[in-house]
Image (spheres, one colour):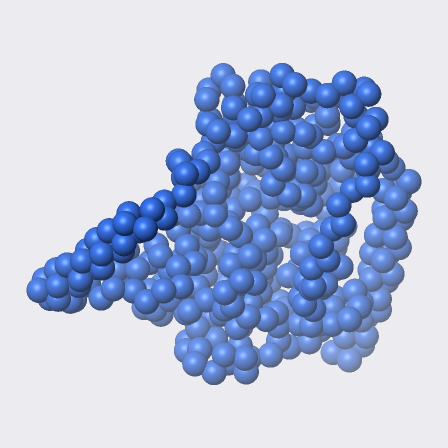
Length: 422
């Protein structure tokens, strides 16, 4: 078969898959539109032994809450698949597969699963609670990472992926919103909703296109069997975005985006970030090669190639602040002791002067106190649980007009991520 005929066959295959995907997504949207909206858990609600504190957000497979473990006295995250979705076998199977995949894992770079339970509010995963922000949020608020910061983030992420692969799991959705940066600068991977367990012979795990279209690998689009090299591709697309501030492929339709992943050569990262080292550009382009055989064959190879570039600064204090998103100027560790102590004395003098001025003018507010913490949240939630409103109060609340919601403007990337499951 000629190369031209082979390309035509691939194009036709992509068209068919695009049509099926669009039809399947429309059917699912119609199904969900017929279902009543899931009632969110209010602070103070009990889910087993867990006291709900607040709602964190909505994930691809459920609603996530911050909660307090009343027996072990720790903060956890609850991921709830509402009953309206649990009745669909596809969602329920994915939720169980997520639990089975994550239960195998024990790495500092993977969010820990504590337990899974069936509850009247729905299927529930009890997960490690971490504070910080996703890489997606970091890029949205502060723009592209510096090269050294990007290498630090992805080097840690790849250590987590190495463990995942050793345990026989392929993540298949390693996008920035699933790469979490803790307040201490530690990287944790999360959301195993479409993970594949390699030794699971369930045929439903193969032959279907799963993943986020903005980051999905060509073999996932074509419904072919996936392995660790698919995660290499998705990590490569995410690294491209992390250092340039944009994705390699921007298209207006599902078909055009899938066609780009399968057929089109990606642009050079240096087109969008001219100061990017040529060596890093080569690493990224190899990771996102169309043919899996031309990529790094393992995540270990990908991580080794990054580290060989020698672009990571060795100062740990700088590394922590940079990864965590600190935006100020960093103090140079090579400053002389006299310069450091002189600056400290000046800072102390200014602070003392300001304190005396405030004290003299009587400007201290009377409401100052310790900041809110988990103990405060638990106490408030327990108070709410003890003072639940009766039916009459609930009916009165229902008659009150709800406050007008602020409409936030979205840039084109927000719109793309929302449209394509990002």
